[in-house]
Amino acid sequence: MEDFTLVPVPPEWWRKIADFDLENFGIDAWSARMWELELRGQGRTYLALVTQPGPIRTEGALVGVGGISHGPEAELLTIAVSEHLRGRGLGRELLRALLAIARSHSAEAVFLEVRASDAGAQRFYQREGFEPVGLRKKYYRNDDAVVMKLELAGRRREKTE
Image (cartoon, rainbow, N blue to C red; front, side):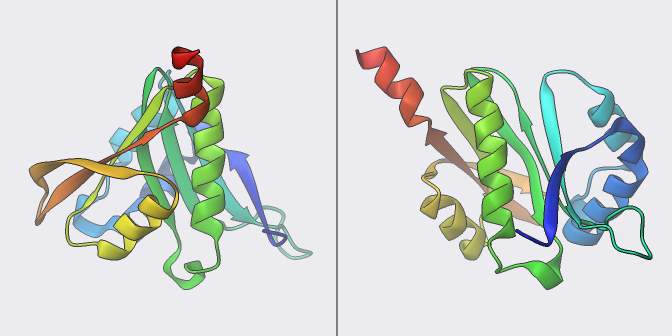
């Protein structure tokens, strides 16, 4: 990730994040108003993946975003990397940073929803330790969602000792 930096998303970026979300999720993107409220809310953390600023740009370009809720059962709220940068491990780094945040807030498990038709994304999450645990019919406008869960090993061990 030498050309990229993970930064906390400031609430003022709500419009920028909403545009990025629309680019990546189309009809299932959250509205700008929803993003404005979400980024000002409590009990969640959002990270942005940005390019390193250059001599011409004083601010890096937004190329990824992810969010996670806090609590014993955390939820991966969203995660996306710009299409032209996928396959470079950036999504994995973003996910792992979000999981570290969940652990720091004492999460015992992390849940997420992923499109039932997106086998590639499901494999990605399975490689990171998530397992399918359910199905939500018509969760997306044109697809079902597979619910996946990651037991956070450190938390599980504490309970059995």
